[in-house]
Structures are given as structure tokens and as C-alpha cells.
Image (cartoon, rainbow, N blue to C red; front, top):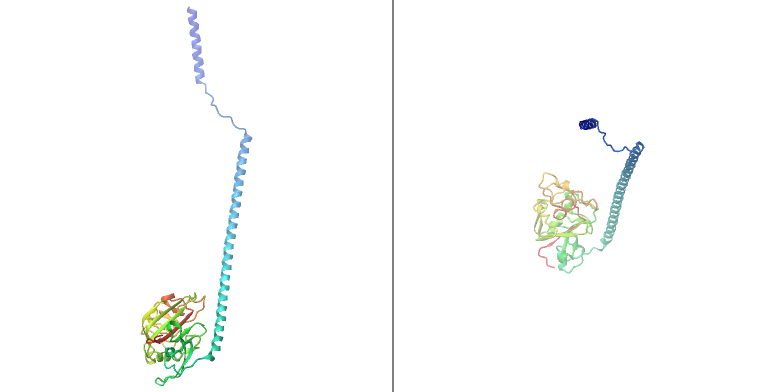
Length: 340
């Protein structure tokens, strides 16, 4: 019994020593197996190749995009240049057509000079002729006025517009005649009665001794027409500098003559305006300048393409403003007492 107990004690002590030894010994950590060295290098090399390929593709796309952009810009510039060239050709063609048309009109005017009509019944003006059944528009001769001492006067009569009986005192349509003239020219008149002309301030005074209506007809370069009419129109004599008196506007052009009411006539050598500036020199015409203009019917004639660049053209501010030079203008008068 005693030997058996001793054996048990010996075995227990041995087991305790083994357990303590195992607890003190370091445990080895479990780590995943490492891939073979050659396999890792192949994957890195493959990734580098892919990155290089992608970089090359991006650079190629960038170069192509830049080339395409340059081509588009070049095409736009070429189209713009072609458009400018086309516009220049159209403008040149229009200018040539206008010049040819003007020459034809001048030739027609010269041919028509030989068929001027006369009438001993034309005592006062075209309204007198209309009252005596002269109903065809054209050139007539008014006899000399013994009372005023004025000579025989050729006038152009409009027998059609708004009942007819109109005596033209100004026309602008061909553009070859300069209206930038001196006092003497505007006093006696100038131009061709069938073309562009100013009848003459003395003759206008002669025709406005009775209450008179003024009608102004205009056409722009787009073919649109407007008119302004004043039921009261009068001009003072030369001693009073051909002062303008107008009233009672009607029409669809707007009233651009009211600003010039009660102003004296001015020319390049006679500055009678109400301004420090010399308006006749600035606006290049003879007119009833105030300070300076709301209209300038005797200004410079500018052809299509140049007609919106200056302020000294044939202007009517209420219609097209100060920078648009009109294509055609006619100023005509008849007695206020006239009835078609």
C-alpha cells in the first residue's frame, strides 16, 4: 500500500513538470504559404505593361482630339473667309448693277429732255395744270411771273400721288449729283429736273405765296416706303434767310422736320444754324439746320453697303435714325386749297 502511493506521487510530479515545460516553450505562428518568387515578378511586370498600354492609348487619343480640333477650327476659318468673299462679290455685283442702272436712267433722262410738255394755262404751279385736266406726270413749263419778275420755270409735276397736282421741289434717287453746294446754287437751283435736283429757293418762295402743303416721300434700301405730310408749309424770302415754317404733320414716317421749324437755311458758305458747330459743313448739304439735325434730306448720297456708317447721309431720324442714308427722297408741294 505504501509503495503504490509513492508511485502515484512520482507520476504526478512528472506530469506537472512536462506541463510547465510545454507552457514556457514559444508557439510557432501559422503563416500563409509564400507564392513562388517568379510568379510575383510576372504579375508586376504584366501590370506595368497594361499601364504603359493605357498611357499610350490616352496620348494617342489626346493627339487625335487635338488634330480634330485644329481641323474644325481651320474649316470654320475657311468657311468664314468664303462667306466674306461671297458677301464681297454680292456687294460688288449690287454696286455694279446700281451703277449700270444709274447710267441707264441718265441716258433715259437725256432722251426724254426733247419731249418736255408746255402749257400757257400753267399760271401758278402743277395744281393749276391738274385743274385744267393735265393728268400726265412729267415736265411742264410755268410762264414767267411779271409781278415777281421771275423767268419761265421748268417743273416736274406728279399728277398721280394722292390726287396729283404736286410740284416737285427736290429729288434724290440717282446719287451722282452733289448737294454740298453754296448759297448761290441753292438760291437758283441745280440738277436735272428729271433726275436729282433742287428746284431753287427763290422758285420755292414763288410757289408758296399761298397756303401750301408739303409732302415728303422716302424709300430705304430694303424697298420700304414712308411719307410725311405737313398741311402748312412756307418759306421766307432771301432777306429772311429762307426761314422754314411748317405745321400739322401726318403720315407714317414720323415727324423729323418739326425740329427744323423756324430755322434759317444754311449752306457751306452761309452758316445760319442755331448751333456753335457749322452744321452745313458737318452734314455736307444745304438745309434748315437747327443744332444740327433730325433730318438731312440734302445730305450725302451713300450707296448700299455704305449707307449705315455716317451721320451726314440722307437721313430721317424718326424712321431709320441718324446713321441710315435713304435710297430715294422726293419733296413736293401743292396749294392747301387744291381738290383733286
